[in-house]
Length: 311
Length: 311
Image (tube, helix red, strand yellow):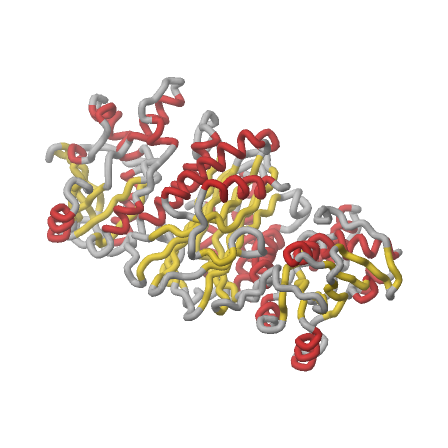
């Protein structure tokens, strides 16, 4: 039995089949029904051991995270996840029941949480553990929230605390235990919030490469600028006691947050907060002057955004 | 600029955008329209250098073949290809314009031939060249041709010559020049034939791991047996002069054919041949007795199908 058959046998015992799937694993292709009035939303992300996660990461977390990072991309469009296809390149010392069992449990747990089916897969031998996941989802036709669409005067928001995964990674690479390890290993894609933001948000992105760089993509896509107040960006209490420069490094340049960053009109911001109090956090405003201006409690701050090559 | 941006810049200069694509590369996900009354058909295949193609394979052929093998899976369902998503793990000595340019040209040439869009991608560094392609297509609702559906009395058919790629691979690994190298490097997915077979074929698979093993999947899926006449399996004239055992090794156990193997009623076989003469080749018949019986001009033959573990 191939490694992929082992993965699929274990997976299907842990998850219900998504009712959209007519033919899943076992034929040359999957065949899937499509919800009425929907558009297909798709993305692919590849994780490489030692590059996208530390070598010490558990097999469970590797499986979980390889799906989570893709669902986060679906969330940033307001989409509802449907299924994944898995391309797994496996070193021979991982081609055993122990690794594959834990890996699949992580995969299955996040898939079950979001009603995601595994409809295709392929395993190959390789020197380095490499996981390429394609995620498919659906969005009501014409309703996907794009990077473009931000308007001058929009409130800039994030979905939750930023910087936790980056701080955890630093602690782990220093050989310390981290109370924030779950933020790094088991990201929680903001699917429900993404869906709620349809009709409210003008533009959206998920934060994978650092808030600074990813928010920069929104500015570039819209040819606008922004003022962000660093004091307003929510972060874990463990980060709040750090010196400002270190804290801002994690928040702006850290990455691996898998939270959402989005913009909406002042009016929609007020409406959304009335409907869903304390779910989103205003951190700044879109302005006509290009470039990103950072302030701290209103005072101008100089801080370098890594990889920020857009201006 | 990332390697994937380079690939995409070159790709989009070589191919028209598929009109189904509303948002392609450049946002967190692609957003695609769906043809009316269609089901989504999807698959993933991963190719590893040295394992799925010889190290001597040209960058052009690597790009071409990584898409072709996936389109062949779509063909085996009768589907119309729509798009691919590319997960590329790239050794640093391939992360240059020369390799990426040729690779992308191969990718673009086959995509243009089948009106396939590149709607997602990710490149990562790795020790070994690994290409994971997800292919998406559509099929009229309820019309996909599956592995199951074969009936006793069905004619077993193939789409064209079998064994050429396997013979070419043997020549190349022996250091010889092969007149059949294109069969190995640039497989021609049988998309048009697959579409025509809707309404005619009862069951279908594409031949990637050898006719013997892949046709075995049809037998297993249908709990039936078959008699194949080896003398009726079309093969290139370069194979016809080989000793039988060597010829049958390439034809039955070789793989990399990316032709279609399918079954249909005697009545449909006659109708199809009238409509489309000389497009398909009858090689045997489905029978109630389980197992695969091989004959040569009607005489029973003993020949071992590799990997044939279904009986």
